[in-house]
Length: 102
Figure 1 (cartoon, rainbow, N blue to C red):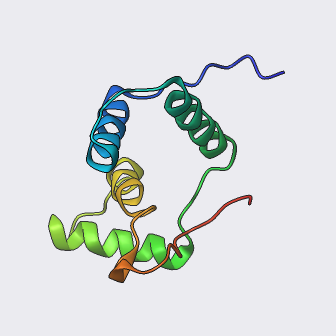
Figure 2: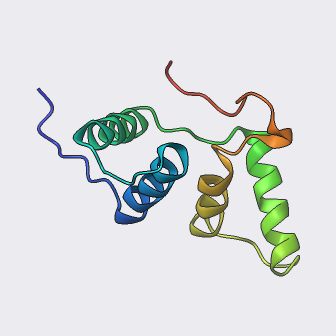
C-alpha cells in the first residue's frame, strides 16, 4: 500500500471551489472533491507527462522569444512553460494534449 500522502495545493482547492460555485451555485468543498483531486495528483505523480522532442524545441523557442534570443534557458526556465501548456487544449476542441500511461 502506498503510504505517501498527496497534498492538494491551496490554489488548486480555491480554483475547484470557484469552478463548483460557477457550475452549481455553491462553493461547498465536499470530501469527494478532495478525493478526486488527490487521485488525479497521485496519477500524475506516477505517470509524469514529459514533452516530446518537438514540444521541447517549441518551449525553448517560446522562452527565447519571451526573454533573450541569445540566452540558453535552463530546465528550470522550461518546466514552468511546460506545466502551463500540458493540459491546455488549443482551438477549444476535445482534449488531445499529451497523455501518459492510460
